[in-house]
Image (cartoon, rainbow, N blue to C red):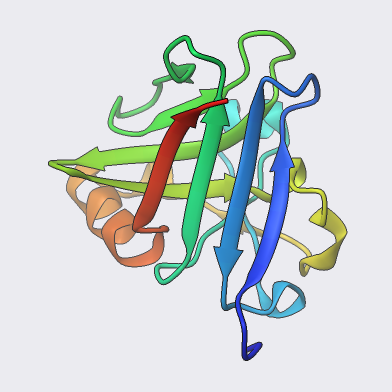
Length: 144
Protein backbone atom coordinates (compact mmCIF):
# COMPACT_ATOMS: atom_id res chain seq x y z
CA UNK A 1 0.00 0.00 0.00
CA UNK A 2 1.23 3.50 -0.71
CA UNK A 3 1.96 5.61 2.37
CA UNK A 4 -0.29 8.40 1.14
CA UNK A 5 -3.58 7.97 -0.69
CA UNK A 6 -3.59 8.06 -4.47
CA UNK A 7 -6.07 10.48 -6.01
CA UNK A 8 -7.49 9.21 -9.28
CA UNK A 9 -9.55 11.42 -11.58
CA UNK A 10 -11.95 10.47 -14.32
CA UNK A 11 -15.43 10.93 -15.68
CA UNK A 12 -17.55 10.63 -18.75
CA UNK A 13 -16.44 11.48 -22.28
CA UNK A 14 -18.27 14.82 -22.59
CA UNK A 15 -17.38 16.14 -19.12
CA UNK A 16 -20.88 16.18 -17.63
CA UNK A 17 -19.76 13.75 -14.90
CA UNK A 18 -16.43 13.93 -13.10
CA UNK A 19 -14.96 11.62 -10.46
CA UNK A 20 -12.27 11.98 -7.82
CA UNK A 21 -11.40 8.64 -6.20
CA UNK A 22 -8.97 8.65 -3.28
CA UNK A 23 -7.60 5.24 -2.33
CA UNK A 24 -4.77 3.79 -0.26
CA UNK A 25 -4.75 0.75 -2.56
CA UNK A 26 -1.93 0.44 -5.08
CA UNK A 27 -3.65 0.55 -8.52
CA UNK A 28 -1.39 -2.08 -10.14
CA UNK A 29 -2.12 -4.41 -7.20
CA UNK A 30 -5.86 -3.81 -7.51
CA UNK A 31 -7.84 -6.18 -9.71
CA UNK A 32 -11.02 -4.72 -11.24
CA UNK A 33 -14.10 -6.95 -11.34
CA UNK A 34 -15.74 -7.35 -14.74
CA UNK A 35 -19.40 -8.07 -14.01
CA UNK A 36 -20.89 -10.56 -16.45
CA UNK A 37 -24.40 -9.07 -16.52
CA UNK A 38 -25.64 -7.85 -19.90
CA UNK A 39 -25.67 -4.17 -18.80
CA UNK A 40 -22.07 -4.12 -17.56
CA UNK A 41 -20.85 -6.16 -20.53
CA UNK A 42 -22.55 -3.73 -22.94
CA UNK A 43 -20.67 -0.85 -21.26
CA UNK A 44 -17.36 -2.72 -20.90
CA UNK A 45 -17.44 -2.01 -17.16
CA UNK A 46 -14.77 -3.22 -14.76
CA UNK A 47 -15.31 -2.17 -11.15
CA UNK A 48 -12.85 -1.03 -8.48
CA UNK A 49 -13.55 -0.03 -4.91
CA UNK A 50 -11.83 0.53 -1.58
CA UNK A 51 -13.88 0.40 1.63
CA UNK A 52 -11.44 2.90 3.15
CA UNK A 53 -11.42 5.18 0.11
CA UNK A 54 -13.34 8.31 -0.78
CA UNK A 55 -15.32 9.05 -3.95
CA UNK A 56 -16.66 12.41 -5.10
CA UNK A 57 -19.02 12.41 -8.07
CA UNK A 58 -19.57 15.84 -9.63
CA UNK A 59 -22.51 16.31 -11.97
CA UNK A 60 -24.51 19.04 -13.64
CA UNK A 61 -27.18 20.79 -11.51
CA UNK A 62 -29.85 18.35 -12.65
CA UNK A 63 -30.23 15.22 -10.56
CA UNK A 64 -27.50 12.58 -10.62
CA UNK A 65 -28.26 10.54 -13.77
CA UNK A 66 -28.84 6.93 -12.71
CA UNK A 67 -30.29 3.75 -14.14
CA UNK A 68 -31.53 0.68 -12.25
CA UNK A 69 -31.57 -2.83 -13.63
CA UNK A 70 -31.30 -6.39 -12.38
CA UNK A 71 -32.39 -6.48 -8.72
CA UNK A 72 -33.17 -2.72 -8.90
CA UNK A 73 -31.10 -2.19 -5.75
CA UNK A 74 -27.99 -0.51 -7.15
CA UNK A 75 -28.07 2.59 -9.34
CA UNK A 76 -25.70 2.88 -12.27
CA UNK A 77 -24.40 6.42 -12.84
CA UNK A 78 -24.60 6.93 -16.61
CA UNK A 79 -24.10 10.22 -18.42
CA UNK A 80 -27.31 11.45 -20.02
CA UNK A 81 -25.32 13.08 -22.83
CA UNK A 82 -22.52 10.74 -23.93
CA UNK A 83 -23.74 7.47 -22.35
CA UNK A 84 -20.57 6.61 -20.39
CA UNK A 85 -21.07 4.45 -17.29
CA UNK A 86 -18.88 5.94 -14.55
CA UNK A 87 -19.98 4.40 -11.26
CA UNK A 88 -22.52 2.32 -9.42
CA UNK A 89 -24.07 3.43 -6.12
CA UNK A 90 -26.08 1.71 -3.41
CA UNK A 91 -28.00 3.73 -0.83
CA UNK A 92 -28.42 2.05 2.53
CA UNK A 93 -30.27 4.35 4.89
CA UNK A 94 -28.19 7.52 5.23
CA UNK A 95 -25.06 5.88 3.80
CA UNK A 96 -24.13 5.70 0.14
CA UNK A 97 -21.71 3.03 -1.13
CA UNK A 98 -20.11 3.01 -4.57
CA UNK A 99 -17.75 1.32 -7.00
CA UNK A 100 -16.00 3.04 -9.90
CA UNK A 101 -15.82 1.86 -13.50
CA UNK A 102 -12.04 1.75 -13.94
CA UNK A 103 -12.50 2.34 -17.67
CA UNK A 104 -13.64 5.92 -17.01
CA UNK A 105 -10.56 6.80 -14.93
CA UNK A 106 -7.71 8.74 -16.49
CA UNK A 107 -5.30 6.13 -15.05
CA UNK A 108 -7.31 3.15 -16.34
CA UNK A 109 -4.14 1.40 -17.54
CA UNK A 110 -2.56 1.57 -14.06
CA UNK A 111 -4.75 -1.29 -12.82
CA UNK A 112 -4.29 -5.05 -13.13
CA UNK A 113 -6.30 -6.91 -15.76
CA UNK A 114 -9.98 -7.36 -14.81
CA UNK A 115 -11.27 -10.69 -13.54
CA UNK A 116 -14.79 -11.99 -14.21
CA UNK A 117 -17.43 -11.57 -11.51
CA UNK A 118 -20.97 -13.00 -11.40
CA UNK A 119 -23.07 -11.01 -8.92
CA UNK A 120 -26.21 -12.31 -10.64
CA UNK A 121 -25.57 -15.59 -8.81
CA UNK A 122 -26.08 -13.80 -5.46
CA UNK A 123 -29.37 -13.01 -3.78
CA UNK A 124 -30.31 -9.36 -3.21
CA UNK A 125 -29.34 -9.72 0.46
CA UNK A 126 -25.97 -11.28 -0.44
CA UNK A 127 -25.25 -8.48 -2.93
CA UNK A 128 -26.07 -5.80 -0.37
CA UNK A 129 -23.88 -7.46 2.28
CA UNK A 130 -21.00 -7.66 -0.19
CA UNK A 131 -21.42 -4.01 -1.22
CA UNK A 132 -21.38 -2.88 2.43
CA UNK A 133 -18.14 -4.79 2.92
CA UNK A 134 -16.25 -4.11 -0.33
CA UNK A 135 -17.49 -0.85 -1.83
CA UNK A 136 -16.38 2.71 -1.09
CA UNK A 137 -18.27 3.84 2.02
CA UNK A 138 -17.34 7.54 1.87
CA UNK A 139 -19.24 8.85 -1.16
CA UNK A 140 -20.40 12.37 -1.93
CA UNK A 141 -22.25 13.75 -4.93
CA UNK A 142 -22.18 17.43 -5.74
CA UNK A 143 -23.17 19.82 -8.52
CA UNK A 144 -20.40 21.03 -10.80
